Image (cartoon, rainbow, N blue to C red; front, side, top):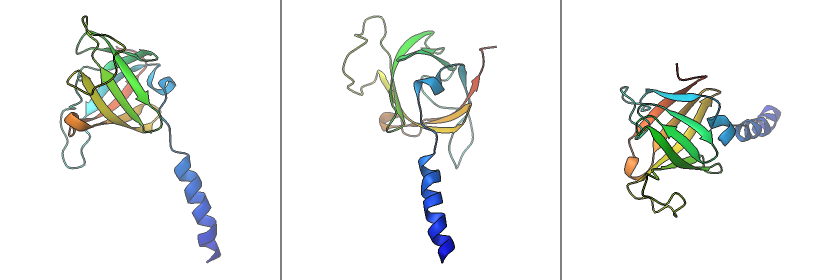
Length: 138
């Protein structure tokens, strides 16, 4: 019985040590989509608009190859969520999010130092992907 009392605090400590998402984690490399992330099916990655890979540049800015330009992103570290916003040439880059069609909303799960999973939220439910970080685009 004493073993159980010892294991409970150890288990709680391990749960609190899970990796947290930060801008530092996202930067320093180029992220490519490797696979869909669905326990039932494997196939092509389906994260919109990240199909051709992304590179996080500075806080709040990400280069998206699919659009061949920068997008804004907002990271919710507490909830492990990321929101990509297409600011386009005619859109106000600092507008209040209304989660309309120009937003791409995902939950983030960190799997390792160079691996993460994005799981679609809201209108993007079912659009999930596994990403790997490379040190450069080549």
